Length: 149
Image 1 (cartoon, rainbow, N blue to C red):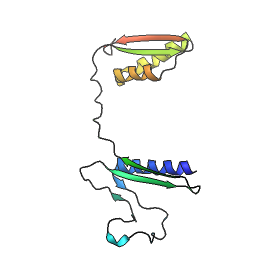
Image 2: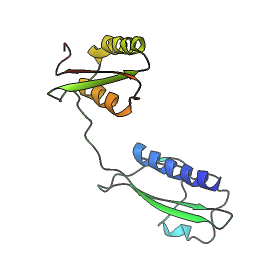
Image 3: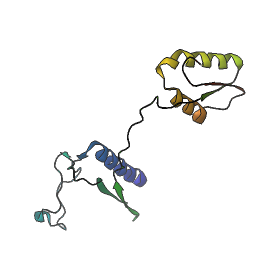
Image 4: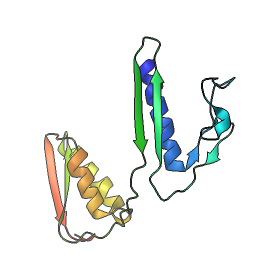
């Protein structure tokens, strides 16, 4: 339960950074008297607010204090923005690697893939098939540089 609580806190803050919101403080009936709340340096959030843009990556700290005395603290930083893949930019020959338990299953799998080929990015399919496909007994590879092939 302690590990799950810590992971939940990390997930919560990663999602908060991703969506640009500061989540409200949960389960606090009365603020700690050990903090000078009047200074304005720190505050409990009574409701969700937009995370202010500062020109720097968003950062957050997550602490987990277990009853057993096991404590953890991590500082998270927003990942840099990555330009989305545009797709279709690949040129050259792309292999599509297929495998199945039988020849009949292999032909059926190839037919299903061929039926959808017009709506898929050729290079993305090739990468997916090569990296996550199971290595069954019957195998086939189709190569081509355009849809018709």
